[in-house]
Image 1: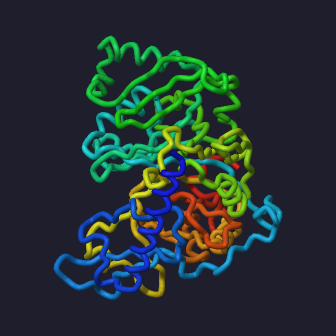
Image 2: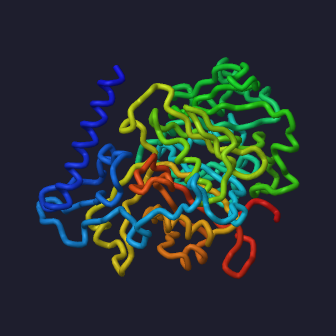
Image 3: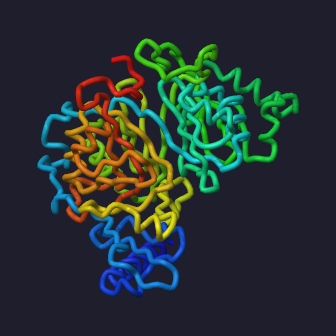
Length: 435
């Protein structure tokens, strides 16, 4: 019953707080791991972030002093800056806006490029990005699959594929091509897709979804859930006059028009209004819909959305994760930079990439909230605003409510927040819009 579930949640919170505070007082006896992975289940959304420590040690050795990593932001302000009663940015939100949800980065299974190619390029008919064509041809490393102005970044897993706890919504001019390709696959006459037979790939026909849209439900080879909508205005949805991703010479554009929505599952009872305020506060984003079970954030002004929905299975918070923290090895931990910069764990979970209109404004708002993050997994790292401007990006991973003085984490989802211009005012090379 509900009372029993609440008691379990309370006990888990007490136990987790005890572990964190015990680790803080006696770090030599509280190493959470002695191998590669941190226990991602140990990070409870209700924990005050100043108590969270990342601790690692070499096997059969004492913990070196530089191996204790505070995940709270060293340069963060101590209080939340949110002067408006509703917690929104006290400055005009037009100072910063989200322009585009550019890509979803999600790992595919290492050594299984054949599955990746069959699904993304033979079935979905994404376009091969020429910047990663060498990897596509070699059948290894990261491949980029383009769909209109949007992308999937598909690195190799470590070694397993990731499965997004949510839904990816795409939009196509017509669903006929997808249906015909699936029928050939089902009949055994599609040689290029034959490799998908022993995977989780599935198509559940064309039907009307909950919003009355014509849609196809698709499962990828590893279990990711896609909903594919039929467009009522293909020219508007592709927006080819506004921008595009690169296309290989002699290759057609993607059959799909755009990534329409990313739905991220959160724990039932999550602070959805706080999620709304988070995006308003940092990026000036508007909320287009909010209910007791979901909130949808506008990303750009052409109907693209980022939705957070309470998990349909009613799972408790510890069962819903969008992050995967780890260190590759104790040697790698020791080699991290310690020249006055905060140290962070690597995140091998999926991440989303957004373009915004005013990077310095968003960076300062993220700094005020204490949610800046640097992922050592990637070469581009921004520890300061100056570095963010030079790199044309910074990252956040904790979503918190600007009204919450405790800064409790509602969910963890890595965001790569990108600028559209470089320091000297030129358009950033990867920004797909023409202007």
